[in-house]
Length: 258
Image 1 (cartoon, rainbow, N blue to C red):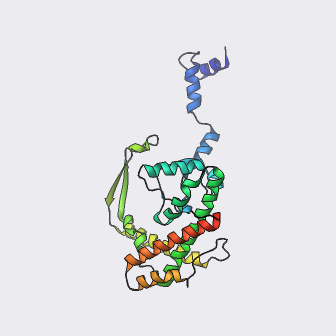
Image 2: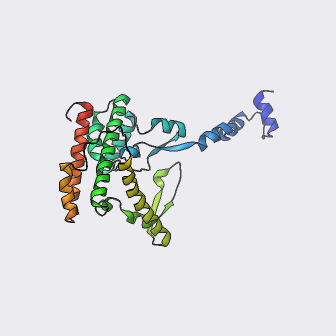
Image 3: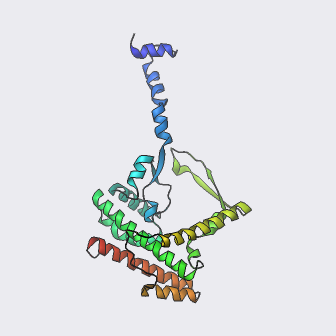
């Protein structure tokens, strides 16, 4: 009697020679090691949030150790996936990081170039946060509130047809909901956002070089527009400045003009 037949007899399978049934049972029953590995899985964002990419339903499972090791870097394969999603009409990157993303995304042909592009996007993101923090310190939060959309906190989200193996069938049902708990969450969301900008300015000895200072002439049109409550003009000037800073950082990091 073979080893599989012996085990099958112990498990009292219908027939002792039903090796396929036994193998199927072994494959579907996870070991303790597999259970620990599954429990340690995390969501790997194809476009790192720390580089300005958007939250997305398109992510990959990755163990915590590997996800941590990748940090805020993406690969050539990740870039290909992100570009494909854009071609399908999906937004993969936040508006403030789209300028630098559009410059680097089609200039990546291998993982080394992807790593360099990740570094460039990280420097741009830090510079953008610095601009936001300076505007908050100088002009307050009213203008910047327009980019937060706290109204999204007042919505209850439910999922229909949720299937981990077929996420494309999932339907998100959004229902407006106003209650005390939602209001508290909204206030907390706004408070943390601006406290984070304050903390950003307080941190010293950063490795990143900031192109914009509090007294930079490039900020004056934004200051003036905000002072006059002309937020539309302030928005135009801010986006123009971010685009210029993104381009300048790319030039510094690559020594070439895009």
